[in-house]
Image 1 (cartoon, rainbow, N blue to C red):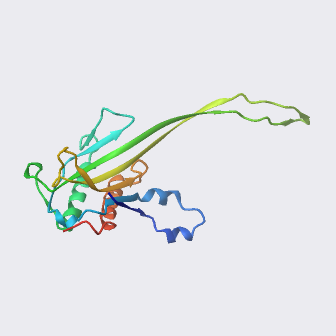
Image 2 (image 1 turned 135 degrees about the vertical axis):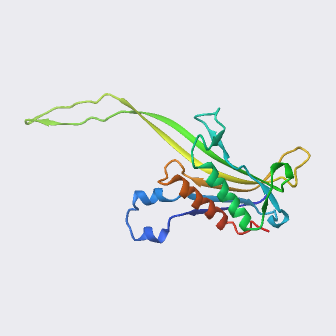
Image 3 (image 1 turned 120 degrees about the horizontal axis):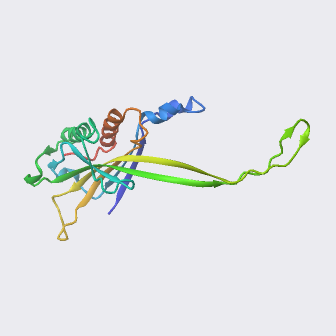
Length: 207
């Protein structure tokens, strides 16, 4: 199975060239969008799709028992994102149907959260302070620093439900990764923009 990867940062590189150091707010202003697809598939062979209306998946190493995000968990996020995915699919000619209507394509939308806690032992070196003209050698005792890193990506998958194999396994035709959703300035709008960009850089999707 052949796959092609596209990577697009929703920040104009030419604008950076005019600034020696990019504004940190600009780095948080847009999500990085990465898409993969199976080059052996013909997307025009599919006509219908099914997608959830108000629930997206949630995969986290910090909360392994929490597997979904609803409007109750993150008000105003799941439904707009799911709607935007559906809007893009409708634009390229696909028709949304219910899950029990044997859709050709299944759409998975979920957030992957990676939480890491780091500890580091720091061994300071010798230093030589001066007090009133007297010099002495002092040694700092080692100490431990602790910091956390919390990152997350919004993921959209298009899955082939039309050609399910005898082993009941499904084939992922297209995947979009958009992140980091945990360091965004405007989570909802930036996620919607990222979804649009994912489809924009995937012109092969459609009827």
